[in-house]
Image (cartoon, rainbow, N blue to C red):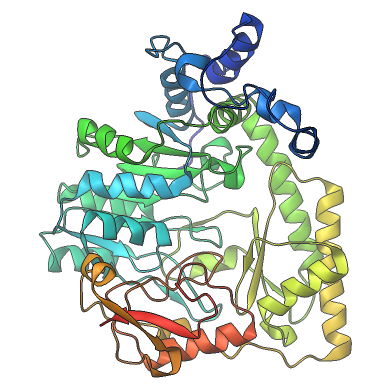
Length: 497
């Protein structure tokens, strides 16, 4: 159960086409004079300063989908054709383009599979967008415990054994929600988890935000759709060449009510979707379908080069496939270059700041002991060599200065929480603010998510523990950034009155 071999996609559609890109090109040739939105009217209303800063082509190609790229009744089916091509490229039955990132996709997925008051099983190391979905849908989460990597102090996926135990304990659950891959590029055994769900005729929803590129190279992990997930969603802007906010939501199987799904998706998607974002999704699919194996082969070689060059720097640990020996893991995306700097006497916050100041390098993940760099198709030997130089420079500086700057945060195994009130009820309750030093024992009424990656350490309805407070205060003092609480300085917390 759960074993899946990576296969090469055989396409049914003509992937030389990019319907939205081509529709924008036709619009420019049409000579139409628009008396519609957007008000800049293909850049004519934009000041010279803004045109110079953002580019005239940005505005010129920002047209409406309805009564622009398509006609007023969308009878040409431009977007629908582009979505059908994307589905064919990745092997799903249907794909939908989102212009509000994978956050919109999470909201749509949860409202599709559960009604208010229903229970779902969900991993606790989920993104904050999933918590927002729980609050809006008034769905009750039963938390699955992610496997803890004791050595790296990170949370990976859910083991099939744990999911089976929780499904047996909660037969009323309407669905299961997991994150795969995690922020470090490690996937769960999605096929095994899907089998367990389908044995009970409930859907598996996979937050695959960091893995939309998986179908396009044989050395990348198998995709969630390939493994049998019922719904998955991926951020095309994260690892492919989509513009920011570009995401795709994929659906397959008889366990999903397609009509309800479409209605739920429509609740959240803007009525003025960006043609630029949609066109970038369309173009990214065409590029990957036609040349993905070659593109990712180059990218993987660059990632492997970086790993090799950094492998023997004592105290600087580059996470590799050895991570697959840990519970809750199945496959590994080598393009996520995660480096543990604790052995250098550093926090990830200090390491990231040093690399920016001394090498003008920024990294994606920054936590109390790790930094993670994304190696993408846009990278070259020149950019990767600079990343290698920055990490080697960091190592040399640490050898010389012997910093004692480790962030002494509690281990993830100590950060367990108890949900004592539904997230919806807690969020909408009467609240008060208390000094963080006095918050132990209170019920939190907001999210507190260290960012990146945006995984809440507290979410509405949980009891605040002294250990969590210790984690937040020490993290704050070490340089942690929290995205969503009402007081981002973490001097106070919003709690149920």
